[in-house]
Image (cartoon, rainbow, N blue to C red; front, side, top):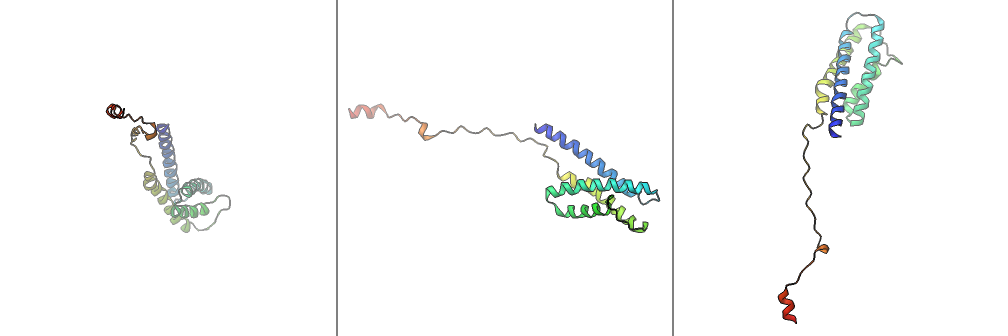
Length: 146
């Protein structure tokens, strides 16, 4: 059972690392002059990834990452978009967002790996209780008393 959980964790970790790396790459491509449909796609992808990160770190109660990616979640919201209207304002935001996703992949997810070693359980010693003991009296005492 534990080996199955470890496999699932590693598989999920690979999926997250790939997805977050893809988001970082998309953010870095966003500094190029591209059509509006690409930026809509970027908003959706970064919004989903930021939502995953906010959910994960909210459960872990690590609020500094939650606040940072909460701001990214709001900035890249495709439902109620924030329009800054100038490409020169979005370029640093895209670069910082890409770097944050790469930091998340490189630094953060490595810390949450499950332990590789399986520690063997020690056998529990058999308990004896005083009420279960039979106390024998010596035969000399019995013969002397008679």
